[in-house]
Length: 537
Image (cartoon, rainbow, N blue to C red; front, side):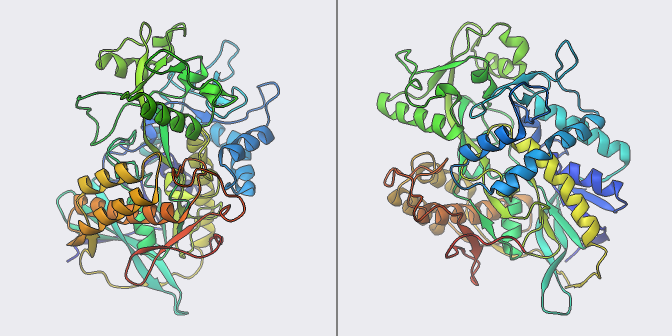
């Protein structure tokens, strides 16, 4: 039974860059906002972002928003929504200015202009950074501080379970709030005419990931159970360079591994195999600065060819490495590696979900009253492979757009919500079974046989369970998302972006240049919809 009920104009689920940006802007527009997070406000993925924010501010000769759009579309391998790309990237300068006004401090050159770096897939030095390689931590610090200064209601230690449904009298189902479980297992209802999902990604689907323990796909699962459509779920980006730690326990969340930012390669670091050879030369015109899917796939091939457990990122030629990359240096030294004197052992790991809940540019989903922003959402910006450092930018820009959309939408008559009694019964598999299956069958280099085996393993381990605590909610989300990713990956019988099929190695622009929509059938199972993706309602 419910232990409590409360109300607001907007409930924001998630306290990263997209969620806090939307919450602050919505509060500024006069809305009553409650932010819900299952951990501390800064425990999500935003604080772990190292590289920076890709944005054209007009101070880099030869660079332009049009060039940034072109680089993004190229990385997206034919599946970007070019209108969405243009709109989001054009909104970057104003979004970064608002973030700086909220207290975010970026690294500055002697003339006071932001310092820049370059990452894979970018033709120019357009990535602004903070703390050398701690941009996400600075963004999160500034937003959390701004939220506290404003007195935003922050409900920590609460996991979102399901959407509260409502009927506006015309037969249209709307979202009118969200049900929550706190750390003590108490079940409550937070009613609101608008719910924004800003819950981040799904890296914990895999045994090794750069994502923290919070990244369990909760938002996508909740949205799909509420009737929303997801798309591009097969495109899970594996970061090429994650610190390889053989046999060592890594604190900070199950399966999480320290990231070695792409900016190390942007500053001159090179990848070498066990013989010392630079194997990216000749593999792509940009070599180590090729898009992430290219570099990750090249590393995976070289590991298979040589039988090695890792490759080596040689950054010994970068002057002042420790000062430029303090976060990477600390992680390496904790593992007994001195990056100034020896190459860093690295391997790919699950990093970013390019797909998610289908939304328009204002975060609206196909379900009235339900919005999504950040990694949980699919706006069309990333396509089949995200361009480095576009993620924080998307969260800033779309988060602000969501706030304005909600302020306009909640002025309409509010539907009557349905009663809520207790936590739902959901399909749940043990997460370790899910992670092993997904790592074996849906990592870099997929095949029909491997995907089918992964699907069989997850299905065999799945059974009904009441969502009575955070672990059960997260495991249910991982179970649903595993089935959805496997369904999409099995349907896409080509290699495109970060989806690599060893049994279909070529790209097929004749029949498969369209995003795959995934929704739940009447039995609650993810199914791939026929035809190209339709826009959000």
